[in-house]
Length: 105
Image (tube, rainbow, N blue to C red; front, side, top):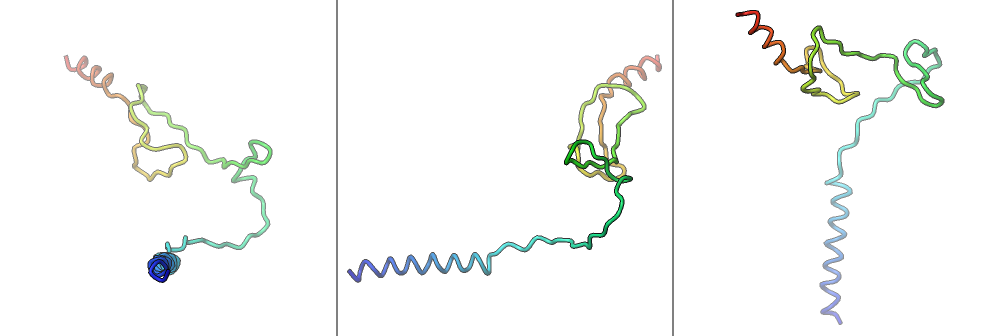
């Protein structure tokens, strides 16, 4: 009976040691949280109520390239932030290249 208890107790001790290490030493870093003080105020200039219970921002960007063409790529997803100078829409340049070739003749 004792021979069977020793491996069982050893296994239980190993599982307990792993659980304790996971909770303490191997615990993930806490998520940083920004805390602000809430104050009453008007928000009509920054948001629009589009449906009951839903609030959306008014800031939107519409893409209107100077030339027309077939869209080849949109490298960013809707809602994703972009920096100044990032490519947000890529058009097929075949039509423009053909126009340059015709003009060069």
